Structures are given as structure tokens and as C-alpha cells.
Length: 56
Image (cartoon, rainbow, N blue to C red; front, side):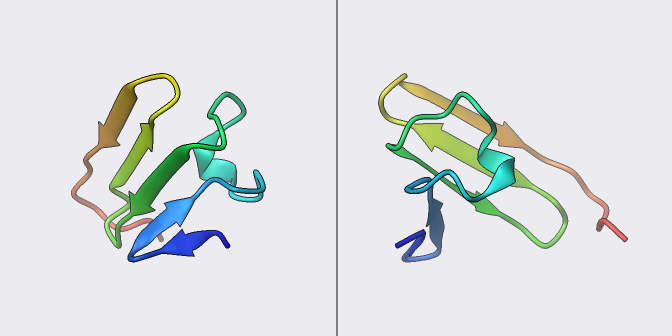
């Protein structure tokens, strides 16, 4: 399972936007305007990227 209640789960390392260094405990959400949030419980870190334009 890689999707849970609106959040992507980093279960099998198949989603490239989690990157190479996140753990299996990481989860995140990507928005329509290319905003991105990744939270990794193993490393106690949360990163949010906010943008105001769509990727096209």
C-alpha cells in the first residue's frame, strides 16, 4: 500500500519525490501547485516546499 487517507506512504521506494534517503516510515503529500510535504518519523524531520505556480 502506498496511499493512506490522502498521504503517500514510502513503503516500497517507488515514488521518486521521496528521494533516496527517506526511511520506510516516511509519508508525504504533493499538491496541484507543486507544493510538497515529506515527514519522516524515523529521522524526526519534516520538510515542506511551497510554490505558487503549476508545473506545466
